[in-house]
Length: 221
Image 1: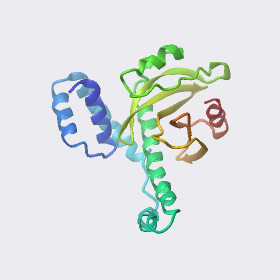
Image 2: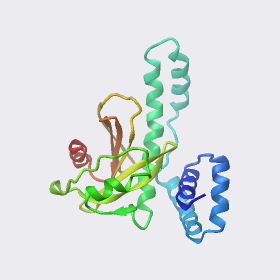
Image 3: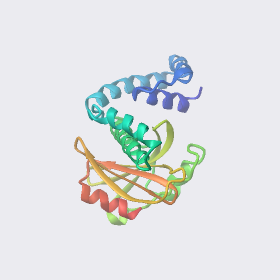
């Protein structure tokens, strides 16, 4: 197992995912790799922080809603939407966890550049799609760079911007046939997030930046 694969397995583990054989292979790799051992120790600290900051108990009604949606799916065309709502809540939690996890690192980026023509090709071979990288410096959203992150059991691209002292993560991955949709804004524990689907890609922008300015960034995408 290579360092990058070990890093993804360890990252998934702090989110409570059972990585099975993949996690065991990562553990064996870490014992012989000082760099990954240091990263594993950092992830343990991140996990403790996420339990205190980024994760919250599911709403008391969530289990009932999921069961009702499954039962209704065979009888009602609206059942799928109810289940989608519950699924969206879990995804929102994963996105917020990835954002907070990045802030706990020494730097939230793996490729540091304000040039979109440098950042975009860096993702080649690291994710299975080509993310559209926007240069928004003229609008006071400075591009810091990007990284690969792990959300919902998959590699995703993360573009990192800065507005004054606020870090903004824009996560992207293929939308898997979903139609383009209007942006949906939400807030959680002092963070704002906007999700939308456009051009065959799912986007999530998340930051402690105020909702109005975060919406301005979303509109530029």
